[in-house]
Image 1 (cartoon, rainbow, N blue to C red):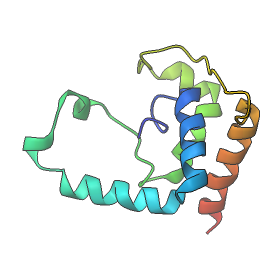
Image 2 (cartoon, one colour):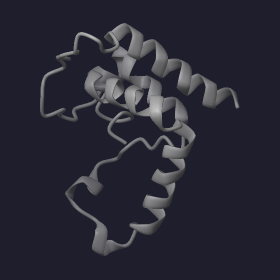
Image 3 (cartoon, rainbow, N blue to C red):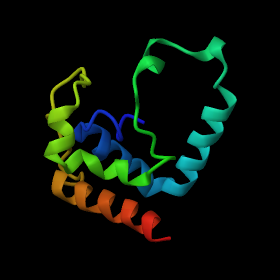
Image 4 (cartoon, helix red, strand yellow):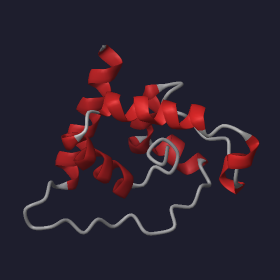
Length: 110
């Protein structure tokens, strides 16, 4: 949900690394199960007041992080800077960004 709403590089970078180990389709399935299981009022919190974009409704929202139009119109705070500290043997930002886009486009095509 963060990747489809906050547009922070760190979210995309982390998700790309996570989806190298866990299939993105599986993670979306788990997100759907979580949203079904915890949709009652007793589970709601302040963040539920936000009008969030949900990747289950439109997977392409996971590509919006690279679109300046969406970034500038969104007022959601990321709680930290956009700086990435990448370990010496880690993926570069450009590598992670490219890998993430391929994963999303692969799901869209299927």
